[in-house]
Length: 313
Ligand SMILES: [Cu+2]
Image 1 (tube, rainbow, N blue to C red):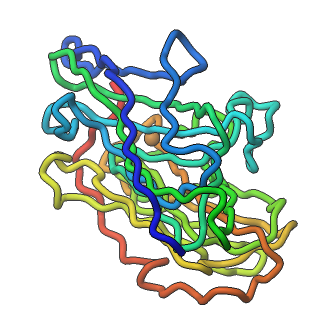
Image 2 (image 1 turned 135 degrees about the horizontal axis):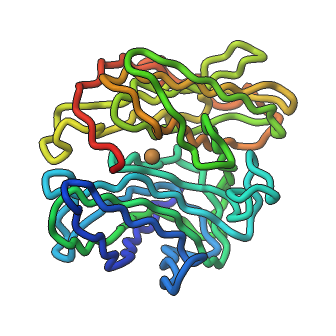
């Protein structure tokens, strides 16, 4: 495989209003579907995305994070021209098209094994994001994406299909949890046959892990585990989600049941947490191709979340 090209795209400035009387403000936007927002810049067209890392930054390039009162609650990128595999066009979310990348304040990257890519056409792309401001100052922030890509003409590239697993799919993605350990499962009957090559999750504070299984075969595919407490800018909030990436994390056949199970262990009840995993499937009948991923990657140890919360206002 040739070395991927690197592109950095930036979107903004996005104004995030100051908090009022201690209640954080929230900027929600659907680009370009609502309002007069400019289109998202395309990192490449007629190309394969092989890796994406996102950030939320200020004009000077410094990260915008909780140590200055700002958090990226979530970001979802869509290809409006392509149908989403787990959400029909007849639903409000499926209407927006294929969800092909997502991240939150933890800035989960999406890096595919060499030779695999998410195909992009000529665009445009759409986005949905929520940004919170806990400070009493107006903040101007930018979303940036550092993208690795290869052109359509690259020999041997394998296109993957993004599959979105969500405890409250095709809706707001949010659901309530009690204090203490809790679990929720969402199931989807697969319409596809192939090998999973990459998967990563999104949780809120109090999240332990989200896990994808093939319930029909009993195969564990990926656990994406929340990390806390090592990066000061996050102020104790969720700071990482582990990612599984290998040329065979697990397999599925059309008609088999895939189950996403999400665990929280929250110090207080919450009304609007999320449990999401985006997994990239290489559609193929060659289910024995590739090599099995190591357990240390697909099922890392979990930690108990701290009692620090930066939730919605
Ligand atoms: Cu979220």
